[in-house]
Image (cartoon, rainbow, N blue to C red; front, side, top):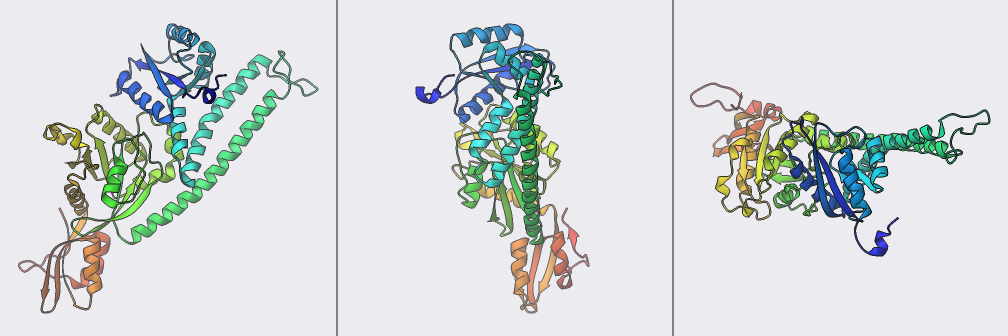
Length: 445
């Protein structure tokens, strides 16, 4: 075993991927491997090369074809790399067979993402979610190891209780693995209970926010698109910002006042990525419910990335899996300060798009105005005459709604504008009919 700490160097990683000929994904294998390289470097590895193969589907036993595996074995004997990172999730048998064939450690994209998550989880909630995902990932692989030993050892027990079969696998081998499996399952159950408490706490917090009738805007997007930079620019929240994938795992919520003087709650969320493991989506359910329960989504897209369209499509796919794809959305086309000619951006392919630079704070007012417009589409149009002693309602109108006109009259304060439908009833008794019609409160078109 190589002592990397003694050598004072990171692990050298070789990356491998399969381009499935029947796959209709927007990503080609070179782009996917480039992203895998970014993930590997974020985890602390040194990427020494990539290898890809075009196949109808990954082979069931080795993932790669036998010829490619033999090539890897030769490169491993030449000490080119310490570990192989595969661009898809491997089955336990594929991982085991590859490790035996090339005599090196093999991990897949899922394990790599989990490692990065483990490095970046800072709150107890984040740590619980990461540990749950890791254990659920490892459990079937532990089962695969147990099955492998069972086949070697015959998998039978004699009358004395010992394990029958080949020399070298008798004794406590299987028993220890069974104990490990029980411990893992017990820990998974414990983590699920702890996270259910977190989930109920988040639900209570959301109910409290909902009772205040403040619209919630969730910042979503591909990892490293600039979500936290935008969140900080808008709220001065001090959220961690790093040029790394998955720098933010734990959601942060802050109050924000729009240019229309309406208050909203802005929530920063974990970034998405292609081939996001289902186990991660399940483990981070408590966090991702912040997206599901939001009133509006603010998607951040890195327009300088060569795969910006594919990244946005991946975000759509994850949102669809969460049941949130149809929510009203504003798109922040970020990092325009890095483009030679931002006017060449095709904004028509994104809903309610605004070109911005979060780092340089360019066009942020225009972005917030667009958010105001989208919020207004779901509000009621109101005309009221409030008594002078109801200054509390005047303030409430400004904080929760959008004031279009305010005028002090002899008999009170006249206001027109937009209010949440759930709040409009509190103003109904003060309704002021339009001068030329008798229309009452109406939904804005």
